[in-house]
Length: 61
Image 1 (cartoon, helix red, strand yellow):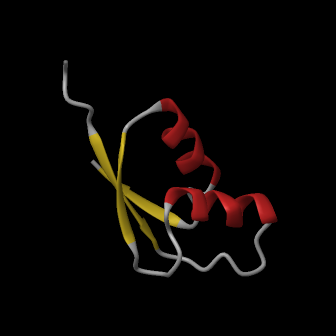
Image 2: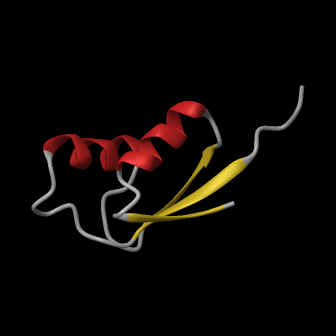
């Protein structure tokens, strides 16, 4: 099996005054605090979540 490519996601802005869906998306990604970084496989599901909260996070390959 081929290895799944990973992406690093870092929260850079606060979810205060954001919609409930955006807050829940950050939690689903595993982000709870500003400056927190998580690593996920590069799947269509994860990329969709990243796109929804792209203004609150930074992404590295």
